[in-house]
Image 1 (cartoon, rainbow over the protein chains, first blue to last red):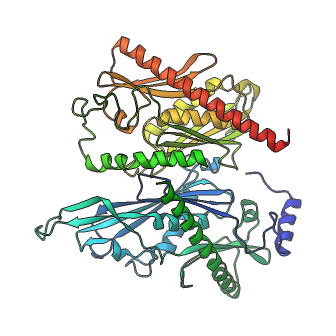
Image 2: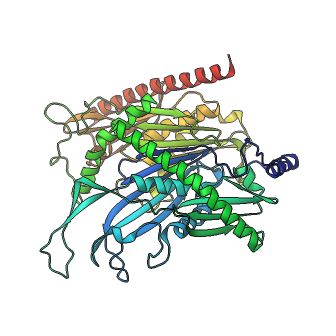
Image 3: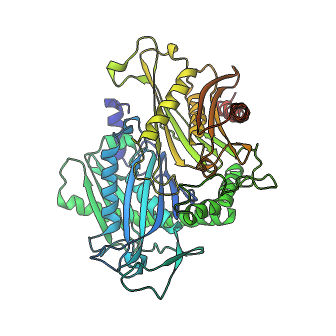
Length: 288
Length: 277
């Protein structure tokens, strides 16, 4: 919102060069993460993640639908992100659409894999109920409430937490339905299956400022960036998606270096996130 | 933390019934008639266990969006709303600038996941535009705009969960956010809704009661000055009943006002203690 003076810019860049950022963090340290699950009761799963002053909410809704005729044994997942004007006054009306579309496609790239669903972080075959006729449609919605940099990482973490909070109802399919009609599906209100999120990756964004790269940049640091690379890495250390943002060109060796640094950072982030999610779920269960 | 747990417990305890009514009544919900459904059972309890004159549980928190000049979260039962205020700041659109007073703008948007069925279009639809205009006019009436000429005040309201009474929750949240931003106002504005079903006036309707097709009166008042700034009604009502229902909604507004004052006082005490006063 407010521009930075030359002195402030030099201060930020100098701090990053010396491995001491304005809030005292090291280059590859994340801000404290705060996770809350189950905040939207009418959704199948939901979570709220606060990364410093960045606040995002993700919700997962499971609805019955027909699978894609080309992939009859896979369910469908669709991701949508909305930037609320409470985060930035410029997001009013259609102002936030550009950022929303960018975040949405980055998330899809990281979580959904190829067209056939191969290599997706979410196992689409587990969403199938009756081959070719009935499947679960997962609608993942993200909402950016407050943005102070690194929104993509926060959204990735929120989607992961929301998916681990998702409870898909058990279904009973009537066995004696004719083969060419829609079978009757009885959705149980009592029994639920917890969604398996061991394969869901976490997104790490490394922002290049000057000659060094930092993880988890704030808005001020992002305003000084030359380019950024967002890598999504799963628990096995495999890369699930990659996005480069920013206009400046990067040497290929630099990109490879950033990727290996991201892998290293992602292990810590994954562990921290898992423990926070487990704590949030435990708190949730204690209250219910 | 204790208050939050209580609110979440309340949400959880009324959660399943909320989901059940959405899933098990696909089409009847749209054409639900008054006579078929019992909104006040013979013991005098409503669908969620409240008495007819009982409001839902209120919960408010100030300063949730640190980037905004003022922000607040307001919950009325299952309806949860975030309001953020940016201003007074420089006018973005020079042609709209006014030399005598501040420009007040407002935008209302609902999250995709806020309603039971997933919404496709969060903003820009007619209902959102109408509510944005209503909130703007209500808040403009109480802000001392002549103290801040050539400036702009933006109020953004985001609905996280919608369970009836979103209009009222938005106005209450906007009041708290404006107070948090330190914008001078003549008085706080509070709002509450009331309806009339099964021959009983009901305070603070939730979504099920609201979509029953009965009348829904939304009132916004300036409590200290005892003036009505917002009055809207759907459906039809007899004159005497209307006066009773409006009186009930005004009482509800006064209850909300005392709660808001408590929250603001608590917030000021915390600020004082942080400053070492």
